[in-house]
Image 1: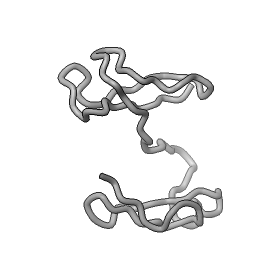
Image 2: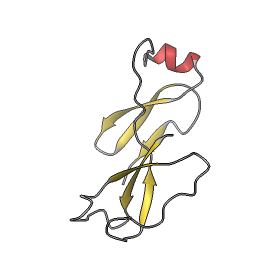
Image 3: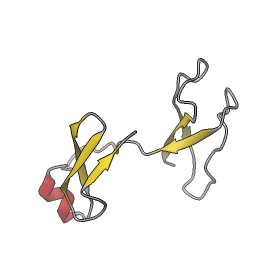
Length: 92
């Protein structure tokens, strides 16, 4: 089962410290409220943990059919490998 990362929509919580993780099946519905503080929450995209023989080089990422973004400045990420998604992402 994957681990999904959630955060309150307000961005701040004294009980869950602004982020929490939940083991869920892929088919399960997304949570809409934090189980600790009951605030409205959203599921976040989190980094993938790769280990062992897997490579995250640009050529390996493209060969696997993925897209890779790297931070170019605060809140701005540029696509460095792959063809999917926009060339630049802006994070609020």
